[in-house]
Length: 249
Image (cartoon, rainbow, N blue to C red; front, side, top):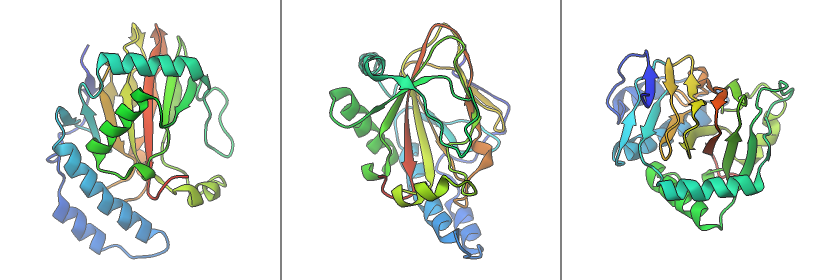
């Protein structure tokens, strides 16, 4: 099984086209909300440059989203320690929405806060990968998917047209980057699908997938739509970190 399958066109160089982005940003009409978009786009340039220099980081060809895979981001021992923490603390997974769709997310979840050694290891590696300030990151979230469990197509960014957005503004605002690490490999199923981008990623223990939830102008990108496909056999464990545009909490 390949680590990822895609039907998209090859992207630009992993470092991105900074001059093109700058030109487009300069052309923006700075209406309400555009200043935040400018800041997010500027921050993304730094993250992009950091990932380009990180060992075993590769940009995945995708039609509509800036998407990378980092092979062997965590060791087998680190993955096993995190799985044990998830199993000890898991509860039914929440969904952020005004009217959550029943059964859209059927996994179990736990938050892993700073303290235990395995959590510190992951946080340190994520800091080195992204260059983002730790205070911009939400708490790590561990997820466990049993047979038949899934997370239907969704975006990680917040819909500013929904009422819940008002509660997110004072605690960090928009989600910018998502970093998800596979902690094991189920016997069958459990791939992560980016349907708009034309990319399907197979779980492989220790591999990290990171993507930008914003477009090149810093606006929420509908092309970042993704889903956790149902597990067909075995159990899937993943670890997710979401970053905000401002300090979280």
